[in-house]
Length: 454
Image (tube, rainbow, N blue to C red; front, side, top):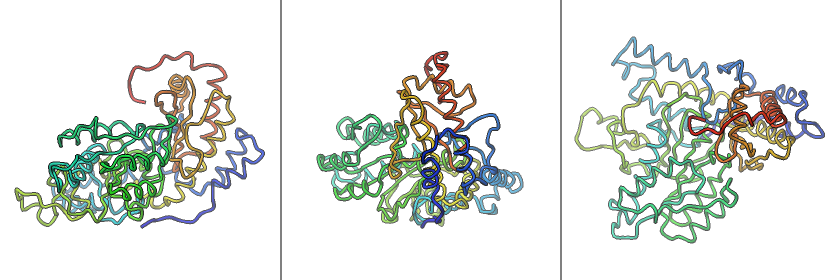
């Protein structure tokens, strides 16, 4: 299920090069760039010439391949019009499934378990609602009179997940203040897996564990296999929001027994703003009626019989709702093919090497800087949380110097060296800007922001 490849270890090369070396020495970054097996991929992206773009964890850059697949669909629309649903190459009618087949190796799944559909938040709604309805204690469950099920989350989640889960609980007459159980962080940065296990032991009403694969602020990578096993040991389902890991971290969802997952396509998949999201539903759950049923999730064989009763596809395709937005889906094809060519293992290896190097550079900065991201490879996603007391103003100063990163309260500048187009030289340059802004206290010229996109 994986397209992984064996390569020389870039993280090992980073360790060797940095032995007794100043990470700011320009020869260090040059040697690492020379050893980069993915260096050629940078030429396939439109990398801003006058900027250092290290915000790929929010929006990946435009690539030739993504543009080509978008242009092809645009031309099919122009030349074929409605005939594109049958005569497109591939045909539009099955395009979501085609993309699911391309993405399945990245998440360790069978193609029938993956489909491109909806937005990430919509998928959280439909997947959580679907599986709540399979549990005792919900109106549609096997025993409506049983104690209502709880959902276990953590207090560092991206907020949209909590909004959606609360809404789905309310719609079933379940008080989210009572049944949305939250694992607290010990340090404000990370979640200890033992605390997830302890919560499952403490509360016998948890029906679903829904957690991110990577915490959006600190970049902590969760142990999906361990959490899934703990959930199943307590008769709970395990679902994950993979928004900050798909395309930069290999997954083995099927092998680990994950029940369901969703993710976006515009971060490390580099499929563009508003690109259609993806979802995974384990084969054993196929045939379950989706909570948000729509005609595009109908069995393809009967979809145009226009029956008034929903006939769900016997695959993850059932969780599609409305007609696939082709112009927002098309770039995923080229983006996914680029990732397949690069190899997800090589992408992960370079990501770890880039963030290893970035952490070494931050460690060499004044003590006012700190790293809020786990240093252990097994617990680190694709970005680094650089902490500074004036993080927001520091982020603004970076932006004016042509460094595109982002800020997350209370003090985190997220720096993401996306592997397919970021060089080690770029990482060193970003760290130099951090040092210069702090040394000169240039951040003091900026006010804190009351809103806007970061």
